Every structure is written in structure tokens, then in C-alpha cells.
Image 1 (tube, rainbow, N blue to C red):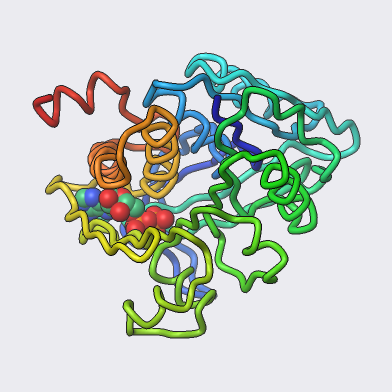
Image 2 (cartoon, rainbow, N blue to C red):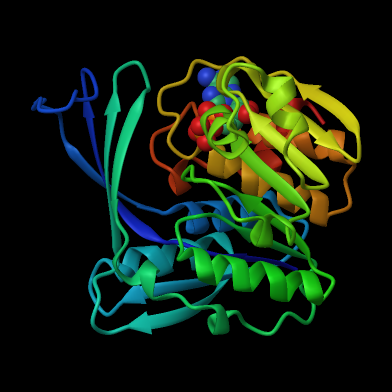
Length: 291
Ligand code: ADP
């Protein structure tokens, strides 16, 4: 199966004409609540993509915000392993989406910050471990190292952007980043090839928004163009990409075929509002691709 270990938040989303600049107040429209958090979004995308059972390690507070998060995971078919944190609020995110589909997000991690290395469940039956950087870095590193030692493929979506110690990178098989995250990790801005070349992991994927993605695995370079859609909300596109890619790899698809699936599912996710709510199912992606 695929194990996702990471964050879960309740997203408070408001659409507005534009994302506020520092110091600016923007009058937005109606408030919408969506279950989110990179970890939970990716777990939902992985489960919807099918092919392998999906489990998730997450931490929730003992409050009402936890309820829709757990419900959304279960409805998507994710088996949750919940660390209940009595003295912290469930994670929340405050999302502004502009009319041209840009977004700006502030996260209050709450219970997510309580996850520890020792919380990782038993790894028997786990083929892939999917991680992000919305959990404490020491926990992410401990999970990656434990999984690597157990022969599990470790995939890290290095988001949000931050420099990483080589002790963590050494335990990663496949790194997934967007252009901004790649620039932070590599220290190189504006030269994609040079930036990709200095990432030490066996595999690396850089997502390029409306330009699709570029990837390198064992010295082989690939490019998957994006699928043309009219984007209304790109929230969760990156997460849909990550979850779908790992599900496809767990199902045994080639790297190139898995990249194509991930681009198709994330393009479809851009055509709808919300993060988890916007993730297409396996059948929808198949129909859309005409396969
Ligand atoms: P992030 O949201 O993490 O910054 P990207 O913007 O690179 O990630 O988007 C992730 C993936 O979603 C891309 O690789 C692409 O496949 C898909 N995607 C994003 N924006 C669009 C778009 N406007 N049209 C089609 N596909 C898109």
C-alpha cells in the first residue's frame, strides 16, 4: 500500500478580485470550508487514483474542525491513523483565491506540529511512503530514514520551500518540487537544467504549472506537457499531482506513464474549486484521456 504521513487542515477559502498585497485589505466573497493540508490532499488524490490501498498518519485536535477532515479521508477510501492532540487546535489554513486563479495561503499548523518520528505506524505491506514539509522536519527525517531502512520507496514533496539537510535528502528516492521550491533547494534560480542537475536524489520531478513537468530518473530526462484546461482554482493542483503520481507508480506504471497521469489529474483539479473536493477519480481521468 501507499502510506502518506503529514498534515491535515481545515481550509477557510475566500474568493476575491485579487490576492491582497502586504498591508492591503480586500473585500472578498462568500466563505467556503474545505478539508485540506498537503498530506491529506495527497492521500485523497492517491486513494482516488486507485491501484493501491492508501493509509495516512495525521494529527488532529480534539475539536469540531477535525470532523470534516476525518470524514473526507474516509469518504475517499483513505485509512487514517490519527494521533489525537488534546491541547492543540486542529490545523487550519486561510486561503485567498483571486479571479485569475492565483492563491495566497497562511497556515496555522496546530496539532500537525505535534507529530513525532515514533508516530509512524508499522511499515509491513507499505511499498511507498509519501511525505511533505508541513510536519516537523525532525519527524519527516526520522520517517524517511525508517522507511528507507525497511526497503520502502520514499517520495518527498519538498513543499513548502525550505533548504534540506543531506541527512534527509539521502533517504529520498524521488523528490517532487515546483519551480520555487527547486530554486530554494538548489540555490539556482532561472536555469532549470542546472538546478535539476544539482539535486542529489535518484529521481526528481519539477512541476511547471501550465507548462506541465520536467523530470529526471537515473540520468534519463523526461518532459510531460500540461493538458490544456481553463483553470478556475489551482489550489491542490500540486497535491493532486503528487498523490496521483505515487498511486500510478505503486500500480506499476512506468515513470513516463505515471507523469502523464499526474499531469492529467492535476489539470482536471484546476477546473474546480477546493483542494480535496477538486481531485478527479481514476475513472474520470481515464475517460478524459480517452483510455
Ligand atoms: P504547485 O501548485 O505546487 O505550485 P504547479 O503550479 O506546478 O504546482 O502545478 C502542479 C501541476 O498541476 C502541473 O505540473 C500541471 O500538471 C498541473 N497544472 C497546474 N496549473 C495548470 C494549468 N493552468 N493548466 C493545466 N495544468 C496545470
